[in-house]
Image (cartoon, rainbow, N blue to C red; front, side, top):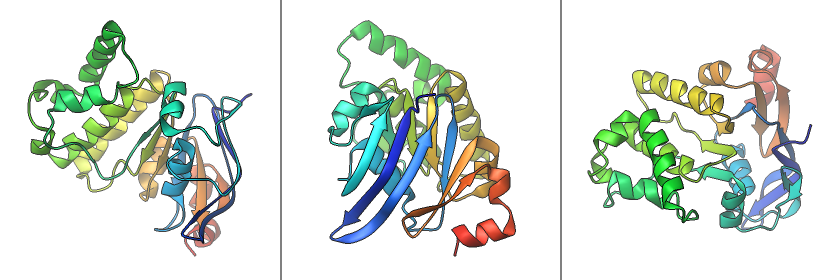
Length: 235
């Protein structure tokens, strides 16, 4: 089976400092894949490399079998590879609706945009109710919903989520878990970075554990929780 996304021996450096070294990651169609590890392990860099937001020093990135290592971020979005940044980052002065429409900047078909917008409002009723409000007036959880909704406006085949649960209340985390499961059920493959192993266990089919910029574990969330494995990942 051809992987939706494959990183082959990918290395990335920031200011001549190695951040990823020879990383191999493979995401199959229909999977939910989790990236875990301590701060600075390289989880976000894996996502940003896949999205084209950081330059790869060496290695190859494939999307649906096509080499995209040197494609620009917008070209990757057009192919269906979409990244939702961490930290619930929205354009606060723009309305909720304007933020969402910004995610569809590559699509000029008005009917198509309206159809996708309707799907997102069904998924996030709170955004529909507040679509005319400035995005800066939303709660932290609502802003996270907006970030994901904006990414969905690009109609991803693979959705990359960077710590989507960070800073959310327990109740909002449960809401987001249900939303991501529904997104996945609707046919979107998902890869996400996360610290909370409980969430990873509830959501991920497979897990990659990173430590010091290298993949040190590949397997299920249940296998990850073995004491010796956790010690290896969180060394």
